[in-house]
Image 1 (cartoon, one colour):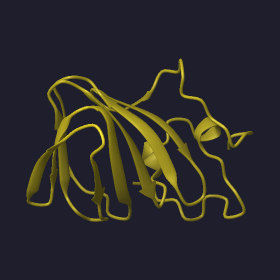
Image 2: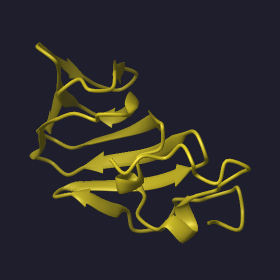
Image 3: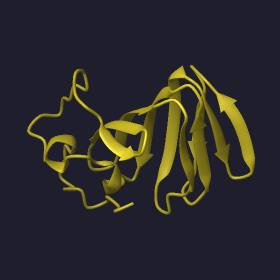
Image 4: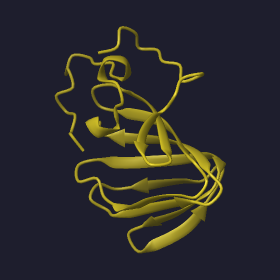
Length: 130
């Protein structure tokens, strides 16, 4: 568990969560926040999060996002919600940076549990493996 509730992502290598996808995470007992970057040409194939809801806000670049049966191109200032259990797929031709929030905290999105988790009185009891 992290010693401090503060975290800087500046100058730090991201956690390579998928090929072409880097993630800078921080999480508490009930919420996960991450800065995500996709290299140009990156696809994250169709998948779902059984227990976790996800919100995304794009800051730079663009991506083609499919949520369920709906596909849209989204860019800076665009946001979306992916409810738990809903299949989704992402593709970025030119690269993208976005912020994502997930709840409950999926432990597979935590690169270094000693550095990236700031636990409170629940001590991570609501976390899910994926």
